[in-house]
Length: 466
Ligand code: PNW
Image (cartoon, rainbow, N blue to C red):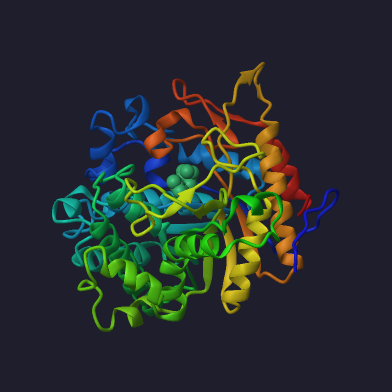
């Protein structure tokens, strides 16, 4: 089965879900409003040198105050679905401790507004804004954080569960653990491989505990969202069928184990790969993985959410010994993808990587539904006479939708596609200089402007295809 990408018309299945995604700290602003307390991203972004330009999420897209206008914008685009995240530090400002009803009121208004506009809400419970109080108590490397997460998840479900049917526990536990605690590029900025492995396990334990709590409370659909990339060799960028050498195949398998199977195997099969346990054993030990944890992590979930931006290109050879995002991979070299264009993030544009990934996941985990919960690109957009001619973004989205279409034709059960992102926003360590939106935001005036890619996406949605 070799997914090939087509041009011309491509009709998507009836009921395919079209939408867009955002995350709380990246768009809301109003960080002191209605009882919210700091998250690790408030602390991190206020620490000089951590975020490009010294940017913070203090104002961001001012979505907290402007959500009604933003919902109107979504209506104009014809979105069927909107994926947002709930800010834990609004709901339980101290992490544990009392529930802050005023924080939940905001999501109440948001959900009611979405439903009134005919847009289905997809709620994510953790998109990286851990309450600072919990980090002060040790953060995700501490087991208690997983229990606090499940309590908070139950609070949110209790308030919104009568109107929200689609729930995601975690967004990208790999990034939260290995950029947050491994290489320190993200909050809380710690650099400790052992802490990163502990964080990853406790994130997954939190996923399992929260899934169990939500299910018992009656949640209809529960998903886990992972940042997944096919891991390929340089030769496979151009020729997906190229045979890797034995040494390269070993490098590929190692990175795949750390990026993909570290999460999919416990969540969907109830076990950690042996090769993974061996790496953890050499990086701080296995004591934090207790009997019974894997049963908790392996709760049935309905959908696997996939955030895809680019493939991971590696070969055997002296690698990034200094980068604690990849413990145990000092003999793996991360390679540029030569000969293909890149986005403003420097991420190579390889749409066939998405079809390869989707077909592989549906081969390995045939029982789980798939959803593209993020896909998109940053480019250096310019406003010209009231327009943003972002044809490269449109090209990126078109190419990746063709990859989704090809994977569906190959039998992958892909149920929907959510663009990252609805709005230009706070792009984590990159601040506001990287624009992923299909809607342009002027961060001085807060004016929104539909980019050409948004106008194009509106047409795609209207005709359910390309
Ligand atoms: C995802 N990496 O982040 C997040 O879910 C979004 O919040 C974010 O804005 C978007 O993708 C674009 O970056 C990632 O270094 C950040 O591998 C970094 C990586 C992957 C995903």
